[in-house]
Length: 589
Image 1 (cartoon, helix red, strand yellow):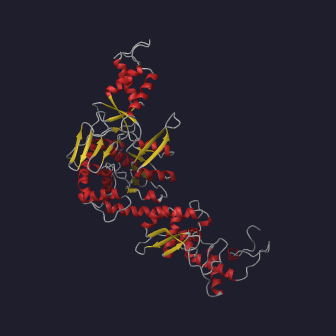
Image 2 (tube, rainbow, N blue to C red):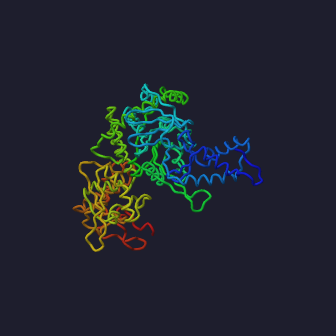
């Protein structure tokens, strides 16, 4: 093949490039609409048409080698790529995978090597194959995986690299096995612990087993688009040192667990789009991620790490060297366990199916093989996570405490909002209207259910408006989490009682007091106790809020029952709360 002079005779450079590509590469289109080239007779690894590691660069080099060092022009390369994209679009789309592929009967693990080797895993065993039976794509965030070896106790070597108890280690092993089963959702592995527990190193070890990368630990993405780019190019990734999870990131992580897709406008086009679709294996390290949204809490796989003493602490260099030597054996042992899981998984039946039911079946299979209790430990830890998430949501905590008091309650969202005023009159996470109450309750429903409170909004009232009714029912067999001090105070003051013998009687802040006591003597004593309680510290009030709350309510009611004194400035009656503290005029006067 030779290029002609620029006299118009002979094929152009673009034509020669297209001819060269068609003779050496198969053009395919992925299911998400991306054109790729696959070397004929070479590894089953696709190359994008453009980019540094794409077909464009490869063709440019091959053209130069075949034409005595002549370099193709940029315009010829651009014209050739346009033609090749058209050729790729003529064939039916094919699946293109990242790192791992397959289903219940066969799993293919891409080792990420230049020669395209892979590991084929079936219920009968695993083997290293020279060429993958499915197409894989590579990205700049991927690193090669060492070839696994048999015959060594890799799990014992892995145990020596991690500072966690046996229960946590067993759950981690089960999570690692499930991470290579691509057709199921995987909960977010969360390493939690104080400083000095080795969270980041543990996460780095885990990611380098599942999906090695030169960037195993990532910072929190700044927006959805940045996150989608990271997730599209890695099968497993870890967010390191998470201190708070923004609502958009919480929703994004939930979707990445079960499967997500991002559609964006293609670069330099007006109407063409690109699709980033993925379901990923995620990990996270945190000291305290703050209040978790209920749907994310359901998808967490929490592992607490133990503090490393100075005598037991090892250097990074020592850990890396030990892990490098042990990694082939660790991967081999995990593959041995994966083979057994694939064999028994079709026979595993769960009596109760939690939210992550497919993952729970894998845990049950591992327990059946190893004699562990990973499923039981996972569900127990999840219940604690739900309780933490409920405590971190002020409205959810108030609803739980309200349900504890009422046992069973039915009413409108607006009525519930009246009965649950925000602490101190305002809270940024408190729903502002009835519509937001319904929406927030739906998000909280799984967590409320985990503490024995069922939520139902399927009924409607019998009046002409046919208003939707909310029903909260407490399961007496399940205890809810302990109420917060602020909410406990509101309950003891009677704010949340649905049965209101005198709904017109309220304090200035809109709170509903308890029924009055028998005589004025009690009121006088209560007023004195209320005045005395003003000298108590906030910590004292949090430790024992009920007595003062009741005393204050009684004093307020006594003030209401009598004639309210006038303000010394404007002459209008003083509010009951002001009279209980001895005020003689309104604060605004």
